[in-house]
Image (spheres, helix red, strand yellow):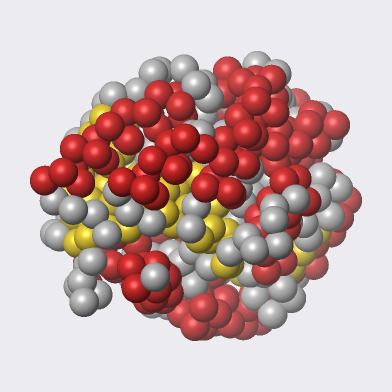
Length: 397
């Protein structure tokens, strides 16, 4: 039986990001299973990416760091009531923490509209601690970015809305065991708390292996993600300087939007590696997918992630991954598909990169195993099937 799912997400294409991409692909996969999906998201992002069977409704929101989560939550609730009055909703699916509801709003939704599934993409307190760790490792501009500054100063306040999601939802679904543990440690939920773990998948059609080896002499390292302090690009540049000194035929491409581009370019120049480093902040998804296939290694040095989709996109592309041995990353990456290094440790990162780049056959084999792992465990069709069973269980109850 097909259900009507109201999906509330502050991000939806053209606001991509991890959450926007997830909601876009999950919605399409749910439609393929016979459900109807209505997404309620923020307005003002540009032309909405439409897809068959998915209805998009846009609401107002306050343009202010962190505070937008409350205003978007309020307008989304009002729009959800209007939607339910004309087209009854069977299940409400929230994507936290970028929507802030208090306990009164959760109770009202459960009483008057439908049961609630809350996807936990991470915690504001985890983001804050990731920024603090980045600052200890001398990452650039931790205190300069307005969004990062807002997280550092107000995460404790917004944590109460995460507590409300934990207590007010019928079922919570964390995107990693690390995220679930984060909620358990920070909020000490009651013993009857129902929280599942479902790792998000990736687009295995867009991200696929190359038809043939690239045959180039230069080895390319790729890093992808928002140009922000907690992504660890400053540490990556310092590690790459060591890699470059030992393997001259290496180059680094960083792809991401953000305010750190000039600072990172200046750092690369000071390290004497600017001729081998390129930072691209405007790239189509098709071009980015090509870069994943072209790369010899994808490096992901982030200080905090709820899950982290970049390693999975690399693996889907048949490319080996080097990432941190921290948080959710070891749940996806191990020695069979890449290599792990100590978070923020320049020597550990450079040694891991050098070792894996020196083993060309190992790179190829890890790429093959990575693609297989994604197909077996990290697809949106798989996500949709599990969420569908959760929705049906709530409707039956």
